[in-house]
Image (cartoon, rainbow, N blue to C red; front, side, top):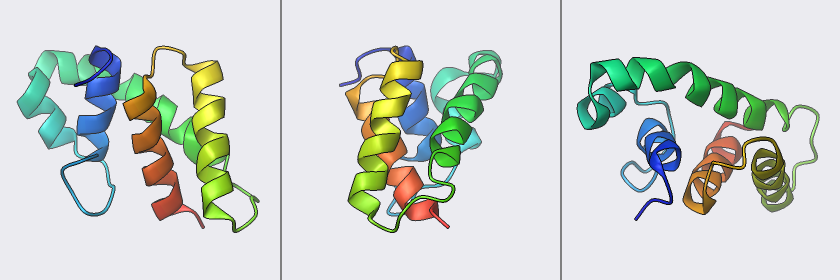
Length: 98
């Protein structure tokens, strides 16, 4: 169950709960929401994901702490992203941390 449409779209877009490794899945988003809605949401989803990833630049290697900080920062900046969406972002950033 998703808290709202934005959270659902973010989880679908990142493949959260569906794929073993996070990556962006615009085709799944289009299939689930339709072309028009997916295209309308894609820029906002990319902005949220980029914001979360940018938080990891120069971060320490403690991935648990990194994921927690990213989830908290996203919650402050994007309050409409629900808990499941924040967990999807934490999963994404820990797999894509460089």
